[in-house]
Length: 83
Image (tube, rainbow, N blue to C red; front, side, top):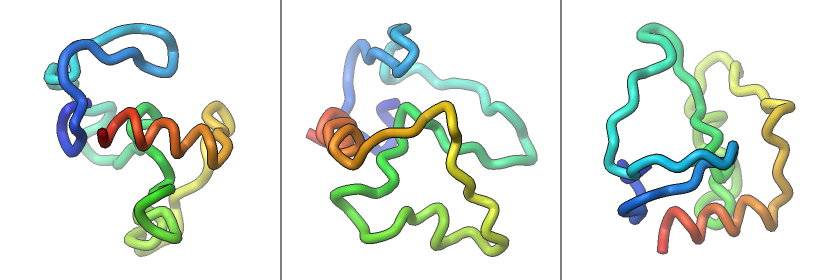
């Protein structure tokens, strides 16, 4: 969680569990890219469009139905990650 953010210490994930923000986590796959829902703000407050979708050469960034958040919720998450 700390990588690329200002988060330090304990951090509560969307599922309610708590982790040390500096802990390193193993990738879900060595060959596929995954968007970490706990860190994704869909670039709200930073860019007009999500940068993963802009950079993806084959338009494979698809919304995850398990994590649908309003713009307001995404902005709160942005503020939590980037004080």
